[in-house]
Length: 124
Image 1 (cartoon, rainbow, N blue to C red):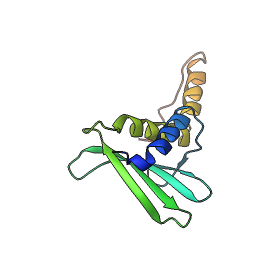
Image 2 (image 1 turned 90 degrees about the horizontal axis):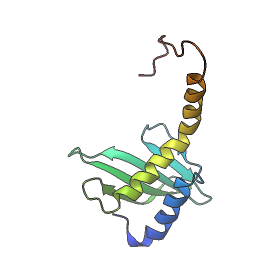
Image 3 (image 1 turned 90 degrees about the vertical axis):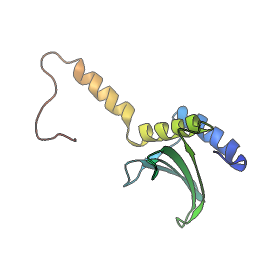
């Protein structure tokens, strides 16, 4: 659940993320994305806990990387799940340049003849 003191900040982050106005970046972890501000960094992460329940976590860190606070919401609770999940999905789309990938696929699909390859470049 989003703590009350963060609700306005999360609402704004949610709206700006949905409007593609937050410069989310990727990290070395596949389900962790960050955006940095002059004195604080916000991280959003999707994960499964030890009971295999899906959750989204928000972390606030100072400029030295020290954890200031964190909170999570679980899919099963539904309190603020949708909002935090949408922030995570927007962050992933932005950081991994999904819109660019979709444009690239569309351009390839518009080409005449055979498309794609089945070579050794398989990312899976």
